[in-house]
Length: 60
Image (tube, rainbow, N blue to C red):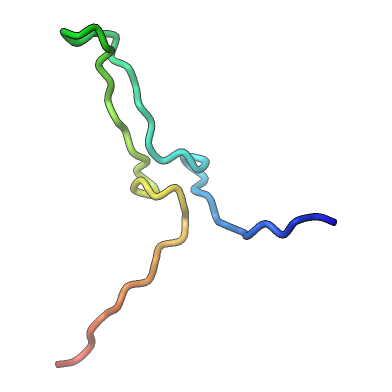
């Protein structure tokens, strides 16, 4: 019997991988590589397309 999988809408620009590390090619003093952390512009690092609703105060 198949398992039910919840439908989580994944960002179509980053395909669910919102943050990536890119190496610059240089090395730090300790020998590790210098990396840049880049986030997806479309989902702003969440990996999902649906934005959470927020409470809005209307009136006074």
